[in-house]
Image (tube, rainbow, N blue to C red; front, top):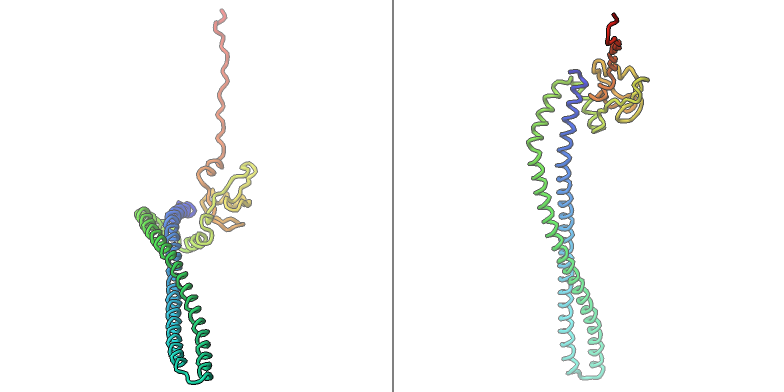
Length: 267
């Protein structure tokens, strides 16, 4: 088996491995998306919980301020009841009015904080529902990933073992070049030679569709020499169908013409 044939076998195994791993990576990406969305919802929920607690605490503080002002106003009214002069009474009245304005502000602020706390509470309830739904989706994603991993486990093990055996048959420098191409070009690391016109010896690279020198194709066909496309750099190979088409046509066997023999011999 020549080096190109070995690489074709190795390339086939690599494609199968990538196909299986792509299925698993799809499940892993889906799980990662669910984890990310769940983490975002959880973080947002924690943020709103903190804000809700802060607004509730601020509302309570303002309610305490209202109670303090009420107590202060009650004390001043008692003093008004025992005021000795009109001037003293008016002084207390001015003080009460000042505290009333202060109380109104504190009460209004407390109401605003309570309203904001209630709004955040409603938002938290929605987030809690979203969080539960996302947890269910994550559970489905975890199960799907485990199922896919289990489905491909045995085949993946077989292919990895096969790849190790095939790679051992390729010399180190060639293997390194091949693996670099697979890493950068994926499924286009290798491409078959395509026939454009066999009689005119015109061939294309199956990856980039650019023309190939006849010498390259001849060397590949004759000895399986490691050959790369002069345009895109992929490793070229000739598949069975193209190889058969490039073989010289068999000469048609000439059939001898039948001679007419007289049915009756002349006397």
